Structure formats: C-alpha cells, structure tokens
Image (cartoon, rainbow, N blue to C red; front, side, top):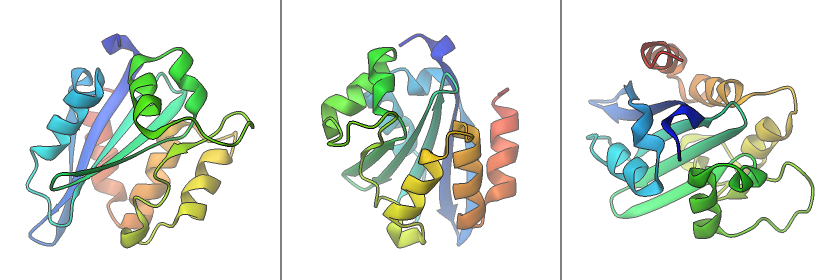
Length: 157
C-alpha cells in the first residue's frame, strides 16, 4: 500500500490508569504486519488500540492484547483499492451483508471498553461520517478525545 493512501495512524493505550495517544508514521499502516507490530510496542494495560484512516474512505480499528489481535474495518469494499484493507478482508473474511459499504471484522473488539457492536456499526453506517468522525466519537466515548485529537494533529493529518 502506498504511504499516500494512509491519512494517519494513531495508537491509544492506557498507562498508569491514564489514556495516552501517540501518532505513528504512515508507514505503520502500509501492511497489517507493520500495524500490529507498531501497536504492540506500547505498554498498554488491557490491550492497545490502533486507528488507521485509509484515504478518508475506510476506518480501521485494531486491538492488540498480548498475542490476540482483533480488527475491524468500516468499509470492506476498500479492499478493492487499498492493500491494507485487502489484507484485513483476507484475515477476517468477506462480510455476509451485500449492502455497501459493509463493515467487516470483529465488531465487538471495543465491547469491554463500553462500545458494543451495535454502537460501532451505527457509527460506521452513517454516510455523513468520515473515518476521523468515527475515531473521534470512539475516543470521546473512551474518555480520551483530547489525547486522540492531539495525536491526530501531530500526525499532520
């Protein structure tokens, strides 16, 4: 995937009971392997989160907890144009729903943090929302909205 296709990558994790958000270089989102390694490097309590905006078309949310990796993408059709999205679909499978855009992956990856499957799907099904809007809402609900926004701004997005 071309680095130009990645709008930004932000890692979010808890350290000493506080939310921390860190911008990552776009190359962290070039491949799924790069993304998992980049998110795994942080010392998060209860798992680390990664947020990737792909060409303002698709929102990728990743949760890495020890050896476990859970991933979600807001628009499975992005796999036709973007290699990271294609890697994700190869891993999680095509969505059963024929509606466009269709979400794919683990919609319950944020459930233990208070954001259920239906909440995540509702956010992504709103055609007015861009990836940043989805991420901003998630970050706000998690209680790390300002940290996320600061990291996103630092990323140059």
